[in-house]
Length: 170
Image 1 (cartoon, helix red, strand yellow):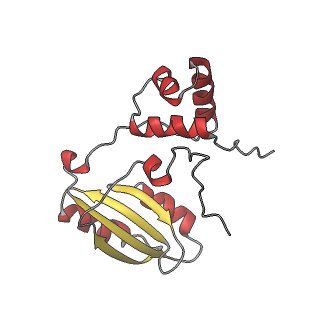
Image 2 (cartoon, rainbow, N blue to C red):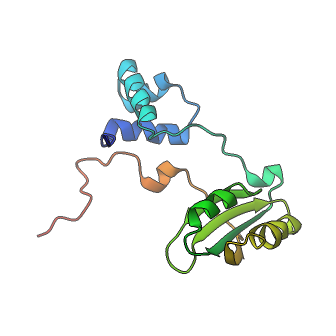
């Protein structure tokens, strides 16, 4: 039986917004800032974890601080029907941070972070193009990027009932 997680309410969204900004905040602190009791905060936190709304906590590391100065998006086309196995293979390559299966001109888009051009050349020319199921690759360099935590991208703060989401039709 497929059980869908319950929809998020304003309390969930407030708690998520706080955790996105401050992942090391205690549940007590999150509950207080979200305006709920400690018991409610723990119950909500446990449910968000159980429902896999919160998938874990990670350090947000600056790639340049650890020597990953080259970022590139690599678009890949693969042989028809090979995408599930190919996705698994490319996701394990060194430097691959992200793999998306896409529609349109390319089958995959990869975000790769490597220390230098030699490492990128190795990934593209020898590892990717060396796979028999890879038909073609197209690489573009990331010149600059703005990374936002998921909460700011999806506006997790609750919308006030006084502020309509859409203009009223009149």
